[in-house]
Length: 290
Image (cartoon, rainbow, N blue to C red; front, top):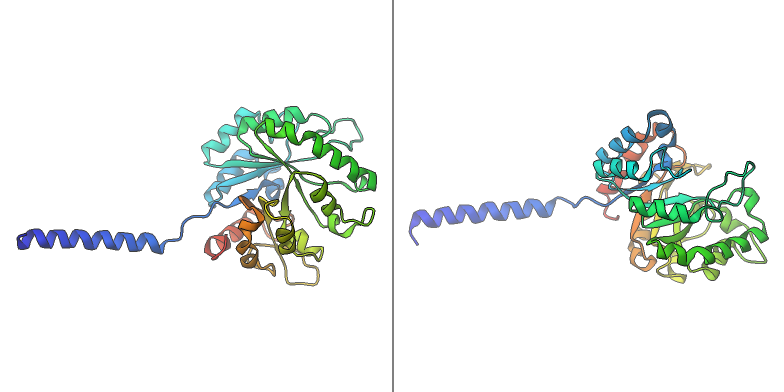
């Protein structure tokens, strides 16, 4: 090898090594999701298109829908909504729905009513999960929970056949109530095969420990809501990374829990919601967990 060729080769190898070192020093972008309910007021005022564009620019890669009704997502047909998502590089992993049992005007939609159409439309946009989001106070009696268990069991297979997975999202009342001596959350875990979308804030707010449930029911928690709790007497919602929840410890048990996707959500924000979700994703991207 002549001296000139050797120097050229050495420079090339040095540059390649430097590129590799730089690549290793840059942390990979995390697949952070957002529950769009956080931005409900902005969506109502501005429409879904500009909001999803801003969500994508902040670095979010996945979304969880809410507000489906009359065959549409945020007033858009499944094909229209799917295009908006695709144009912004967003993946609609999951969606929130009601049971469809409680309605004053006969217009309820959900598990007990038009579930077949809901599944068709969810599949059309590429959703993987259909989650029962919330039980209103008039659906929390003993008979209501027993009926819910029947509904979840009845529609679990149909949901699978449509290519989706049925699940349930908690608040705190499922842990603070007792039905025949059992917590409703335990009743759902023991008596249905559906997955659980664990809201880490609400479990913690109730006084329970998420890690206890991961250990007792491994693999049942593929989805999480990641929201923080302010270090105040009120324990209000806070941007992720600014509160008291030990996400590092929770994410260490992600495999045991069965975690596949997680979503930032902040039910109430003290600042503009877009600023709040920016703080949350920035803190997640900088964190060693997630």
